[in-house]
Image (cartoon, rainbow, N blue to C red; front, side, top):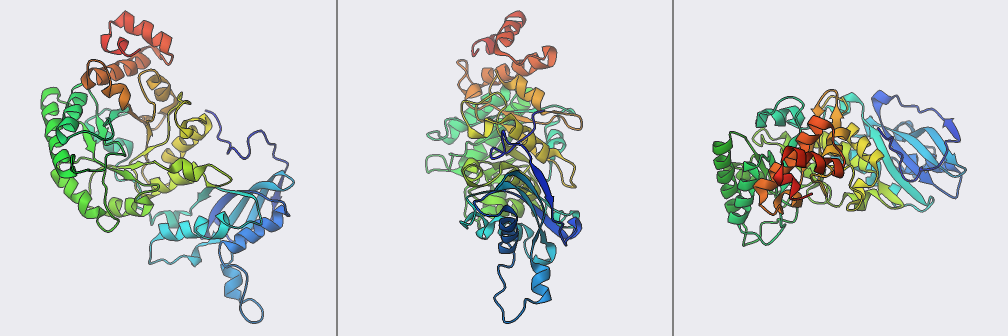
Length: 438
């Protein structure tokens, strides 16, 4: 498994660890891990960031009060990679956070909602990671289902992956056309279908009619095949309406829900839905816009985004695709992908989030994604969502879904991860559906 190295540190050697020591224990504070590059003194800049992310400078009369001093974050240690750049570990005290109001909003404001991404007394900064003490993490809902909960909904065996698709084209379809694509895909063995994020419920494809028709189509497919398939429509609503729209979608037949949880409704809405007992379906947190936040000289690392989405209640999160470096920024770094999978699975007291391999996922890289997602606790804990690769099959979505299953079976039987070997094996097995798209 390739180690994740933030791009600011690639090719650089750790020169020194400066242990300053925090006045706060890990149990009474949140630890924030920042990369910083400055033209000034690295230690002083780190200490100034800790100050400015909590209290700011003292502006009262006379000497600072003991409460002010106690409330100010401090620097526990610094890992120096150059004379004026390194990774700093800041501890900010939990007693600055209200115990009666939303913990998520307060954390975001403490970590990056203040001036740390704006000040110019350093030139580059990135929030790389954070850690919560257990008593603070317990205030977050976490996912309702996780991989094993979704497997139970689908009657899958332990260790099985979830094979799914994304409705394409992303616009220009009527509700009946969407339903037919879903029906054909389910006949071929697809287990999970979500709307494309660009499906926004226009007048020619309203949410209610679409969800009802898709629900009917998937029930018909289940009667014919004996296999279940979940459907997550895209929930488009204002923040104050999202619960109502989500509940109506479930009444209409939605068996999962999908929305953008990075730039759209964000973590707050995710928590609201995850905490509502009446919304008892898996939640798919779409990642659109994440690379705009996680790249550049002042950024929030993908690790932070994935961790917050998990804590906030995401059952699914699209992290990228192993073996697909020609499409999305998120798939360029295998070390990052491995790190995100770790973040979504590690045992921290909340359920796991299912990593979603999507965005260029297809039959030729299904095998490598099964291999890279294999886990001792969860087995093949991954949702393989192939949109165009399934739906554009020359013989239709049913054949496309069948081809995806054949590619998965080739990995199970022979460990095949290469296109050439996959084609040879498809010829040997007589898999016409797979051969037609190789």
